[in-house]
Amino acid sequence: MVVDGTDEADRAVDRLFHALADATRRDMLRRCVRGELSVSRLAAAYPMSFAAVQKHVTVLERAGLVTKERRGREQLVRTDPDAVARARQALDALESAWRARVDRMSGLLSEDDGADTGGGPAHARDRKGPDG
Image (cartoon, rainbow, N blue to C red; front, side, top):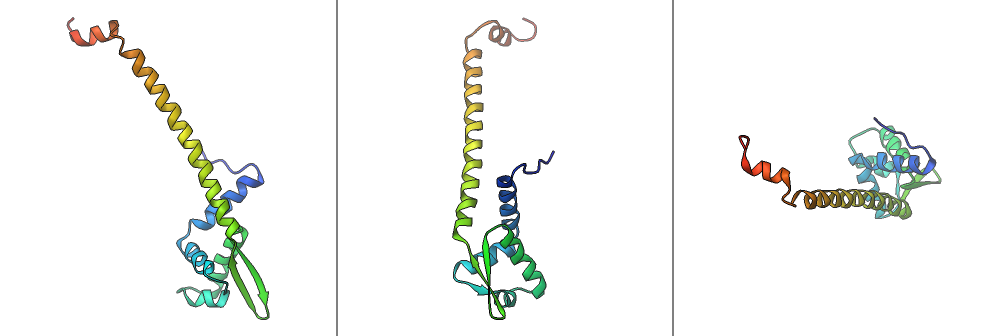
């Protein structure tokens, strides 16, 4: 079952990871971290149409990973460092939730192991074998 984000914060995280899921967009992001680039300069780096590059940039922009600014005839793309921090925060929250689950499971398994090592009737039966 897939659950859609129920609030804007969930939808923002969805857009963020959707944008980062594509290798081309991650590469564009890395290029823009080094300095702002025009969309046409970005397009020259990829074997795809200018329109396809524009669509990738739009996905990055909707996710808040880059900003575009028009200067004359050029649209300059720059990475938003705060967006990268938001991605890290989302991953940290997921890690924290999973670590808590694993810790709870480990605790339950430890409790279960402690209850079974008492040498009670269940263990005596297992040692005797099926014929008693």
